[in-house]
Length: 142
Image 1 (spheres, rainbow, N blue to C red):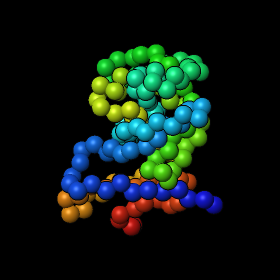
Image 2: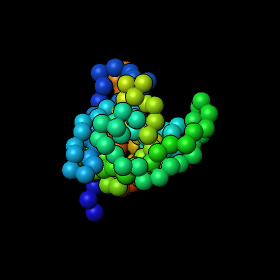
Image 3: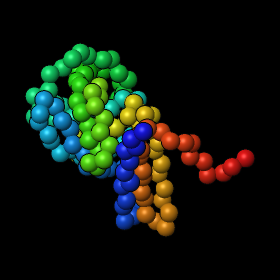
Image 4: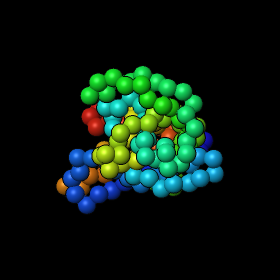
């Protein structure tokens, strides 16, 4: 079994989990800024990134967002996280997340394929992600 994993470390407490990644589509490779969001069901890319990469929509999907419902274009991309974790043929939706300064919002569709942990020990946030899932992470045993 091949395990892919990474840990992102910050020098202070963070309220947003941001890291660098790469989006690949039809032999084009673009560095992107991602944000991890356990409150998002699906992964989104910015409309600007979809246009810049000339992504071809594969369909449309109705979604519910905090500001209401919307019908969004869907695309298939490959996402490479920290040069370690590769997610092939990822179905993503376009969104206005570019206004938040990010290119990709990673949702539970990605988080749920592996193990995800966040800690804030000694005033420094870090998070780790690995696929495939290896075990349950528990801090208190019964």
